[in-house]
Length: 256
Image (cartoon, rainbow, N blue to C red; front, side):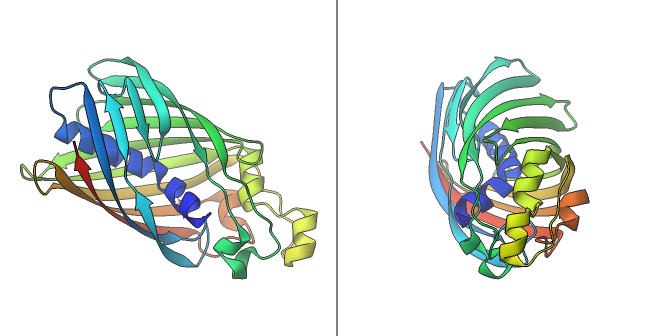
């Protein structure tokens, strides 16, 4: 469950870095395949003060600039509407779960949140000076609905090295907020936390800096550092022990 949670916490930033690196490497052919993996260091759950290191997959398949794609962070989908400056698409991916075992000190008595499927509506627009991307995700009743917007830029440094930076904001409905940050009467009795109702609203703001390096024609490496600042009812939740969570991701992959 920790793996699913940490993977999805960094979903927006991973997606952007993957898209930028694909563009940077793209050749004039229809299919692109990439297989690899790495490690992630980050919070056991959003708002946790426990940090863990876990393995992370970095696998993707893409056809004609996203007309079809499959990867570990956006799931399986397509960008059927696209032009030189924009893309609009849909996908089926994963809604993150959470287990008491992720952080037994802080989540004891809170119960588990099952991982499930999520339908995603995604889009991006390249202004030239920056790229604006957004995603709306609708999952199970526990996951609810979330929306994220991110503004980022890729900066070529050398023929082999590129760096990127972005800022983002995340919104969540009441179902999502209560599942991940609320404390019901039953949970209060089991955990000792006071009952807490979390309302819909802006959940967090974030920043990301990353680097992409072509080691050889086929091998590459990615390094990403992300900071996630919880806001509003998410930050005020009794299960939130740190309202600012940094995370670091390092992966390497082979492009066919």
